[in-house]
Image 1 (cartoon, rainbow, N blue to C red):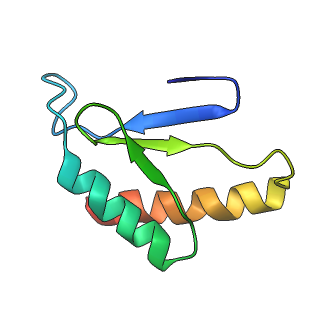
Image 2: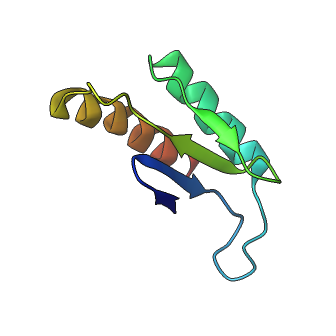
Length: 77
């Protein structure tokens, strides 16, 4: 979801019920921070992860950051 350069993903326990998964979001934030990527959680339940890269971000930097996020999501299981 998002508008313009700001995007967000919501972490939920399952896609059907869409029950918010705040602990998973916090784990992802921690993983990313420990690997050099700073993200913010947002949303009413704190289960959404906000992405807003600087306009000066290079394609290589974007891929590097998204690789860290992907590894964190894989680690969540």
